[in-house]
Image (tube, rainbow over all chains, first blue to last red; front, side, top):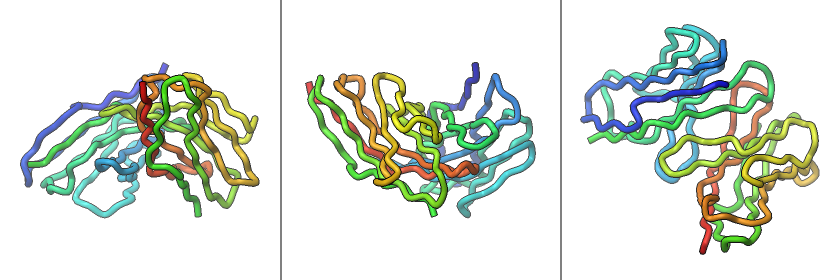
Length: 113
Length: 112
């Protein structure tokens, strides 16, 4: 069966520090991969998605970036965190093809001080 | 353009009573529709999906939803609420592309 792993579960970082969140998927190949941010009490905002290695699409201009160095690995990064980057970050995958559901990791709670 | 509206931001029910969480969608094509549940500080778990097969969809944990094209609705129901159902629920629409449109969520409270 397929599984998705996100780490770390929680992270506290100072303003201006760098960020690296990692997500890996097991049990499938060539998944579509996603990064979302969920602000407190709000819905999900799509940040990035990827349909293949090295292929990243950005949905929202910001100081975050994403990379997909391997088929089942998706990394969210920042060179300098802002206070507004606080939130709950979720990675998700789906199989290729139409009408497939997304499957989510357990998320990373990021607090910026 | 696609959109999803969850009509209630909060719903409270007593344990053992029915649950109804309402969702309306707008889509230019035949949509795929999903319901997810999110417990605190957890990711979203897929409850059920509609992808143009049967209009009544059964999901996990006793939940089901009915796709009504004429009403552009996809309401989530459960005959009898359990304390463990207390969580946030998201209705999601997709038109078969990579993008998913999420509702703003309905927080379900279950009273003992």
